[in-house]
Length: 313
Image (cartoon, rainbow, N blue to C red; front, side):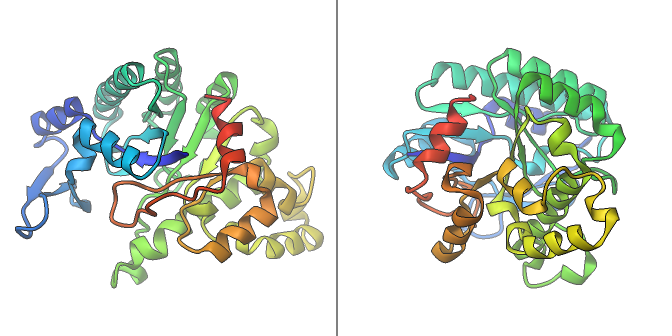
């Protein structure tokens, strides 16, 4: 069994955070005796720095104990650092990608890894991706856009061109939604996270980008957000409005089959609907390990998707 959605923070990255704590406004807080310290970067998205995030041996043991044979390791979204100057972002990018590349080379039978990139400077992000894949990483994990710009914005063209050239896996992972209406009861995570994926995936679909850069393997976190479950509305808009259909060569529902999806949905009926809509071969097992809302163990019945996407990495 494979796990395509996991996160890890190498020791070199932890050391960099400590060295740059004042620049990136990093803080640690012990909230209770039964939990590890909570880490915050720039007062955003506080999370428990569990040992599974930073202890390679423990990470591998936990994956093995649950029956996972091969894990795809991604940097954590909290460390994208898109809201800092690109020079700072790229410094961490270099440390993160190099350390993951070394680990994946040593443990090549057990893990593959994705890079992080300086999405706040798309030309630099393109070079980051090129360097990472030259080191053996399989693509990158990126956020859903930047400073109000969605990923179809022309400013990201250099990055998409490079990703297409490299035939990279592009794992689109949401950040917490900052809509103030959701600022209670954990809603920025509960519905804000899949909502950010929904916005991004819908934009990519309607923009025509999936046709332009069809060598990129776009993997959507958390089952694609809400998009697959409202695709009928997009199809109706395609029939009614030229503003919806003008960039498309086929119906929106057919473009759903051009994405890849992880299985982090926590609901067998929902996962079954997704499989019937896009095909099991487009879904890969994932857990979001070791975050609190991880699906543990990942779905075991999606070998076709695993094998198909693994062939590309």
